[in-house]
Image (cartoon, rainbow, N blue to C red):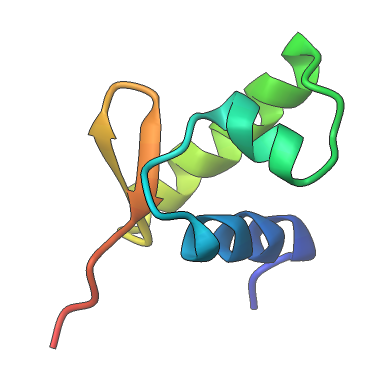
Length: 69
């Protein structure tokens, strides 16, 4: 089971038309983009990349990983 914070990040990225930065995700989730919040979001994004749920297409730009069939 995935926590609600991760579910919110996945929902934002699922609705996005392009890759997003951690700061953009904070703004989309109505979280003040203070450095501690941005770094927390970035850590969650990196964790999702390590689990092959997201990809980091360019340094700091995250998108949903393509589904494998």
